[in-house]
Amino acid sequence: MKSKEPGTIRQLFAFVGESNGKMRLSIFLAVLGELFGMGPFLMVAVLADALYRGTATPTLVLFLCGGAAVCQIIKMLLTWRSSLMSHKISFTILKNIREAITDRMAKVPMGVMLETPTGAFKNLIVDNVAKLEDSMAHFMPELPSNIAAPLCSILLIFLLDWRMGLAALVTIPLGTLFFAAMMRGYGPRMENYMRSANEMNSALVEYVNGIQVIKAFNRSAASYGKYADSVRYFHDSTMAWWSQCWLWNAAARAVLPSTLLGTLPVGAWLYMEGSLSLPVFLVALVVPLGFIAPLMKVSEAMEQVSMIKGNLEQVTAFLKTPELVRPTEPAELGERCYQFEDVHFAYNGAEVLHGISFQTQPGTMTAIVGPSGSGKSTIAKLMAGFWDVTSGTVRFGGQDIRSIPFGQLMGEISYVAQDNFLFDKSIRENIRMGNPDASDGEVEAAARAANCHDFIMQLEQGYDTMAGDAGDRLSGGERQRITIARAMLKQASVIILDEATAYADPENEALIQQAISKLVAGKSLIVVAHRLNTIRNADQILVVANGEIVGRGIQEELLENCPLYRKMWQDYAGSTEGGAEDV
Image (tube, rainbow, N blue to C red):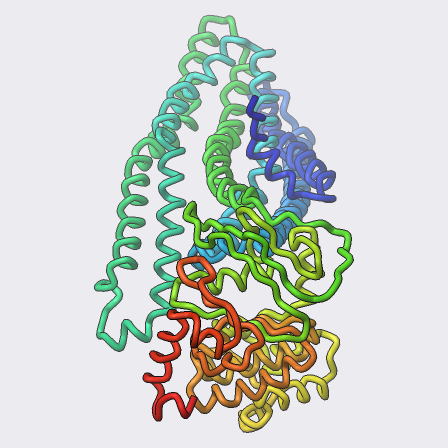
């Protein structure tokens, strides 16, 4: 039997943490404030009755006016305190939600992160979560208070005269029908709104990232089809939704507050008939004027619930993404080497690795080569624990990689990808990420070993120069050398270079190769490469094609026994200036 999903509010309160008691107090203060807010209306009714009977005195008038003022002041203070508490709690919830999302991002398979557009994550972490703030801060304490005060007021009128109670409610059914018409199809429309917003944000991020190409080819924003279409669809679908709501919303707001349409004629008739006293008549006229405004807020709160639900569903859907399950207790590791045992791996339902088996040796260099899309980078990512195999086993240090805590595994290996991502921090701090406890001297020593000290010192602020967004202030070769310096500082036992020289020019490639030779001293090295001269001295070369290993050995053996590697070498040698002798 399928377990029932918790309600929207219960899901939201799951992120309250230790502030649960404070939220309850905020709700209580808001309810109490609304009850005091009804005081002035009662004071007006009592004053009107006293004036009619001729019993009003200056003292009574001052007392009633003072009482109304005190009630308003108390309401203001209670509402202020409740709102202050609810806003603090709301920001605590937002913080907890964002922390939960980022924590899950670190634990889900890398494939999930690669498949999801950057704009979708921006929309999830920034927009979806931010939209919850206003709804939570006001909805949580105000909904109960906006229900409690009208209920007390309606109960009072019914206790005084049930006929006037019914007359006071005459506009509510019609107003409710108008609100129901306004909310028709809200669920699918909200889902469409969220999806179109995600698509627009993703297209926007892609557009901004590709602005250099767009400008180079003289493409305007309107001519960039994906972006233009997503903006147009978001605009059209949103406007269609709002236009369907506007008339019903206006009708509901016009009808609901008009309680005098029922209480005035009914009360006048009953008073003239002699079955209703003037004080009750006046109370029945004045009090409903005070409880309709909170009821209007209740109707608005229903829309906020739907808004919370729509945004929260986006969050919870990601938080339910299966994560890579790893133990918390450290594993006992043997020799720092890898063993692949009949490994199969499927990506998006299609198997990309078929029965991969091989073993590395400590302190040696293993190269993985093959045509584009052959699966060589997938093997490297399995080594880093970014994915779990579909079947078979990947072992590190004699242990199934799935039985090694992710933090322990990351402490043993240093993974350098071809993307060479740098944070918008100083170059010093980007290198220090390899070892947060490293001194400035150790950072500079790693930079010298990675052949990047000289160019860093030529920058305006040296090591304190900001790298820019994703390191965009540096060239590709410079970013690569900094990531290698970061890897050197980490002091890992295994280095995985996933096409780390892919974007380097010949000059930078030579410097990078020198840096790599220093990086791997006494360590195991795994290199995924497309430039074969970088791996020709490897202790073991694995040739991968169509997700299978079709050749293995040292270069001389492969040139003799592996037709694919021989062709790759001939193609590479022929494409380099000066031929094979220069490579």
